Image (cartoon, rainbow, N blue to C red; front, top):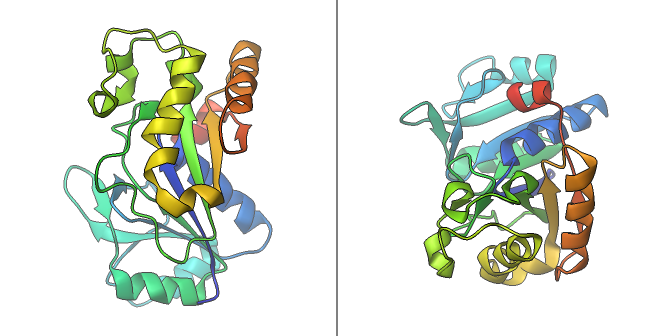
Length: 219
């Protein structure tokens, strides 16, 4: 397998981050494949069915990016299967993996069988959305009950840090040592500064990011 594999987990912009990275890699002349190990929203472009119909490599050469998966329910795609995944890893320069779902909320706690990180991943990125700060736990955090959080509590910087630590980093085993935290949705100076303060107290290094609205929608 020759591809560099990077897995994105958590909430608050995984898919946007993946496609932003895909475009960056394509601009550098690299062929990119995107997959999910669970399920993700059916992309508006670049999709190739897991059956890999005739001509799929021509589409790859033309577009530089392909998204491969099986057609799922409710407008989702799912894992393409091990054989197809290995073929992609052998042919691509970069494979970007979405390793869990988040119900489109800015925060989440990993479930008992999450995330699903391919064994050949080079690095993992754990995302959380800064838009959650100042809002009510039950409105912004998927599976909050697994951490026995007060559903009516307001998400503070300290609580967001706790959700990242206890809800993600503490639940991914040895992958933690390869994980970078990404605090996304830093749409203004206030959130950017909050993100920096949160990162300073975490057990893993990280970055603070934001994406323009048009990029969030262009998936």
